[in-house]
Image 1 (cartoon, one colour):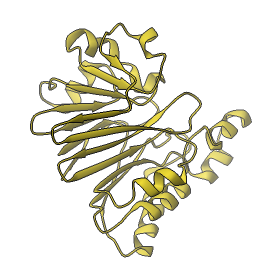
Image 2 (cartoon, one colour):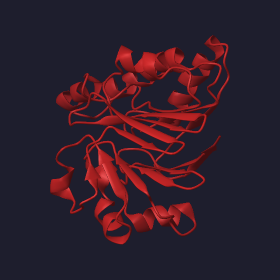
Image 3 (cartoon, one colour):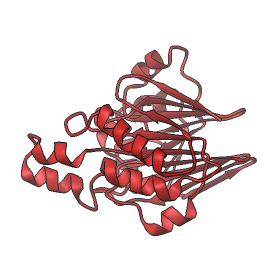
Image 4 (cartoon, helix red, strand yellow):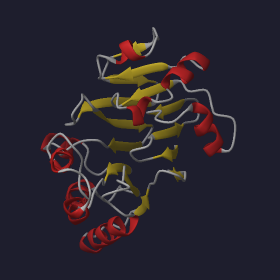
Length: 244
């Protein structure tokens, strides 16, 4: 399983998952031409496009990829059909195909939003961004997986002292907003197990966070636990590749 994060942040999000016989894309928040330029090679034919939710930074390039490739689209968002003309949109929460199993599960955001669990053969990925909190049920169900891509959106002190208006700060830190660096680490402490090989911190705010703040938090976490997975801090501009 090769996972290439092409963009992560408020300006666009997209993650490419390449398997032996299938290509999957989680969100397409940048134009397809931009993603191809970042990838540095012809963009692969996407078999399955997973849309977590319909904020622009997750669907900006969807019309182009539908026109050029017409992939099967899966989402728990009922209004996607109004935004894109495709007959291949499904609201099914599970996909089972040979050695591949995908499940979309509900998160808590200000629009309907889903996380992604993907299992290919014996490798397991959990993808969670754009949620104000993670339910205990989700934590229990997805413990000790190979790879976690999880939101670490803001540092509380930076948000509190930042320039955002009060109502926006409250929305971000609400149960329908985003996960802070501190809470992201608390969740990861419960999720990480002896099978976990890699954790990636995603969707960092450009205004209310820094890679250094995330690094400090995650290093502290890794000192507290007995497992030592690799770590990556994703960003808006550069691609990051994870292989298992």
